[in-house]
Image 1 (cartoon, one colour):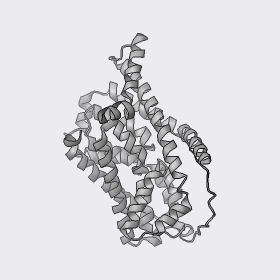
Image 2: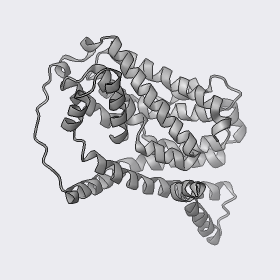
Image 3: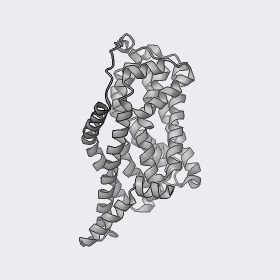
Image 4: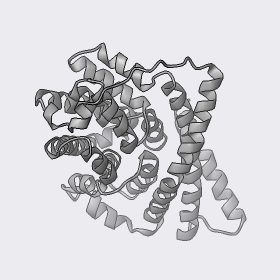
Length: 331
């Protein structure tokens, strides 16, 4: 039953078979490079956008109960590592990319929340969310998805705790430190209001994400059907002990969210790339993208920014090697 849910519900393998049959009926051989690429492109684009719509609707509906002021009050009740854990968990029900998390980080910091707590949120929000859990489950299975979420939360909690211990509050820009949070009363939304808000967010986010999904799926289709397997294995397979480091560094200059990364990851693993290498690339893209670092630089000083990047990079590399070691046991 679980295999059926994973393959046919989350993975939508029935859709892949249907598209293959339709392409064959149109006279296009799906075993050829061109036909296989087209099948991969159509299937992954539809699958990701359907899952995207469902996930955004559910997550946005949940988010409607946690506006920034309410989230601030929840976090304010906790102290020490417990606060870091709660912040990391709250990051799982927030927006999908780091750029959309940074304004919330700035607001929480201005409101007087401990710096380590806000950084646990900032690390967790793009790296670990309900979307990553479902999407990874649809491609790699529940074991990979659950372990990915757990280690992502560990990085968020450990990173935030370390930043807290270093007492780097003076590394936050003055306009953030001296900012004042205004408590505005939150109007109680009706169920209908929440559903309407969720649908609006589905439409708005889908428009923003679609270009990245198309590009990501296009790259994945090219890798899947045109790049020789031996090339991938040589660069990103077992034979290259520095594959994880290379993948993490290559992912940083890019900008995408998990929806654009998943088809690339899927194609790389199918071609023989190590799972840890692929996940390190994916985590580098969604956590340390260049545009988000430029935005973050406006809120914090270079020393704190460098420490944040170093913590995330080391964490991502360690996670990559960890997944390489356990790959044979979980796939």
